[in-house]
Length: 264
Image (tube, rainbow, N blue to C red; front, side, top):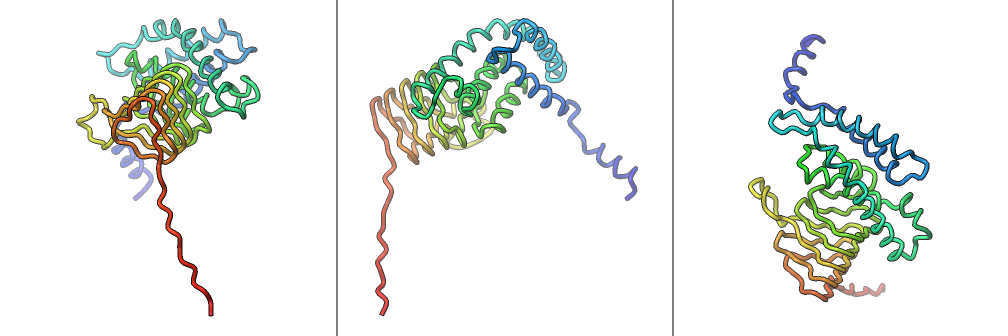
């Protein structure tokens, strides 16, 4: 097969007319500028908002290929909510400082905590997801996922003062609901009991009520599963049914002592 035939065959199999990886790259650049605009003290806010608007318009051109779903007004709706998002993120950072004895300053949280970074990108993506902006919110949270190991679907609903400690391996599904003052440790999964395409419009992931702590590697599954307020879920617990408020749930390991064979 000569080169011209190879090119012809590759083109024949490129079947997605709207698949442009530039969208992924531009989304990541947009996130970086937005993060600096909101947090970095030396970044000029007014100037960067103008640049962000231009970059966002380019994302609109790349992502909104369905003419029946115009996206032209999304930026106007989004930018007015940025102060509110920033206020929530400041509460998240304060919750981390208050809860983690290893944190030496709030600046350390903003600069060095992967859990905070993942929450920040989630909150910025969630607002676009609520507006029905296609694909970009998922690209935003996947960018955070690649940097932190935290996979939060932008459709999840998360309340105030959220704390993810250590971060790596956390999975939060699309229809999960997390209320206020919740703490989650590494490896926690808030997932679905099973996956089927016909469940797309149903609540598949659990609800976590106020003041719940979920320790490392716990798995909580199912759209009808509710973890009641003030509960503590121990490490490695596997939960598929609701837990009443003020409960403690823990995994009990089975210990078998191997008999010692005495050498002759």
